[in-house]
Structure formats: C-alpha cells, structure tokens
Amino acid sequence: MYSDALTETPDIVSPIYDEDRMQMALTGGVDANGHPLDVIHADFLDRMEGPLNDDLTMVMLSRPIESGG
Image (cartoon, rainbow, N blue to C red; front, side):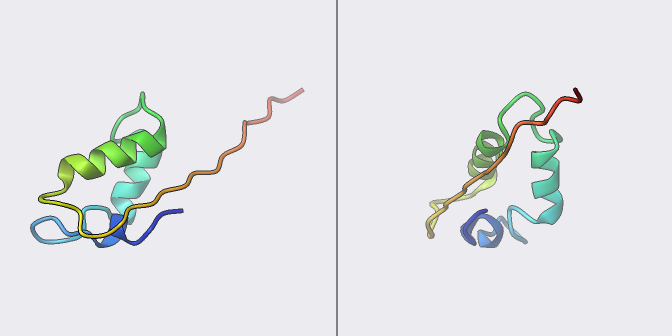
C-alpha cells in the first residue's frame, strides 16, 4: 500500500513510478539485494527532482513462504 505521492510525483515528463517501475522494484529489477520497501524508497528519492510536495507513506505486508513438508 502506498500514498498517491509515489505514483503522482512527476519527473520531467511523467510520474516517477508507474505500474511497470513498481513491478521492476518488487521483483528485483531495480535492486535484487535490497528489501523491496527500501529499494522503492531509495529509487524514488534518487529519481525525484526537487523537494517532495506531498507526504509519502508506504506499508508492505508479507508472510513467509511455506516450505513443502
């Protein structure tokens, strides 16, 4: 879950994060070694130009993958 600042904060032409960028970040396409929430946050801030004019809130819920057994 995330606030609209993530998908509505523009870079030069379009929003910094769209569905494709979000999928890349969540599946390791941006940084395969980091926690997805940290990756999205760092990537967003790196791509953002100027100050953020809105609040940015992100919450991630996950559960462990059950091993077959």
